[in-house]
Length: 68
Image (tube, rainbow, N blue to C red; front, side, top):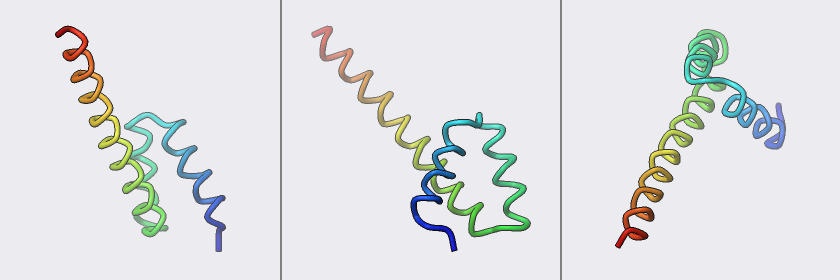
């Protein structure tokens, strides 16, 4: 069984080194052979996308406040 640190490193590599198309392709391939790994990566990607949306909204609000 992989250690949590090893899993974290692989998830970070997945998030940082692949574009959205590559991420989807990796998940699709893993769903057939390693569904648990695919589920972990899919969840990490969903969290990343949600985090990006939150950051963009916070930046927009901050900019509007600065204008006031």
